[in-house]
Amino acid sequence: MQVEILPQLACLCASLNRATRSVTHLYERALETSVPRFTLLYLLGQQSMVQAQIAELLTIDRTTLTRTLASLERQGLIRAAPGKDKRERRWSLTSDGRKALARILPKWEKAQARFRKRLGAERWEVLIAELTNVAAAARMRATDGVDRFRPRKTAPPRL
Image (cartoon, rainbow, N blue to C red; front, side, top):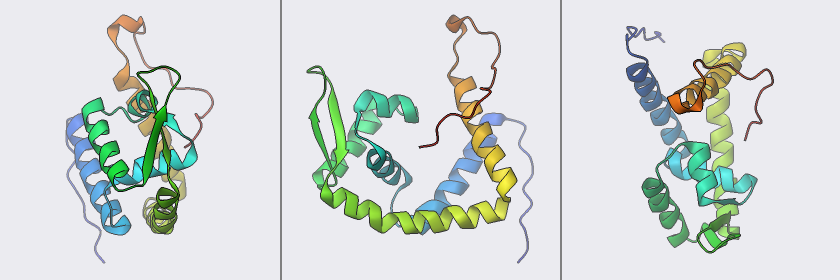
C-alpha cells in the first residue's frame, strides 16, 4: 500500500478542515452512523448533561445541536428532563440509547485503534493534546485580557 503524501496548506483553518473531513469520513464508514450522532450518544453515555453544557463542550451552535438532539429523541435514543431552572433541559440516554451505543462502541474502538496505529501512539497522544489546545486558543477573545495561549500543565480530563 502506498502512503499518500499531501501538500501542506499554508492556512491553519484549511488544514484543519481537510483533516476533519478526512477523519470524519474514516470514522463514519467504520461506525455506520454520523460523527455528531455518535459523539452525543458517547457523551451522554458518560453522564447526563444540559444542552448548554453540550454546546459549550463541543463548540457547536445551539441550532445544530437542537436538531441533532431532536432526531435522537424521536428515535427513542435519548430523553430530556427538566433542568435546575425552567429553561434547561437535561439530556440522558434511554435504554435503547445505551443499547445503540453498546453496538457502536466496538466499531469506534476498532477505528480508534486502527487510526492510532497509523499515526503511532506517541503522535496520537500529542495530537489529542494539541487539538485540545488549538480549540482553547481559538475560543479566546480579546476581551478575555489574555494576549497569548498558555497550555495547561496537567492534561484535562478525557471524556
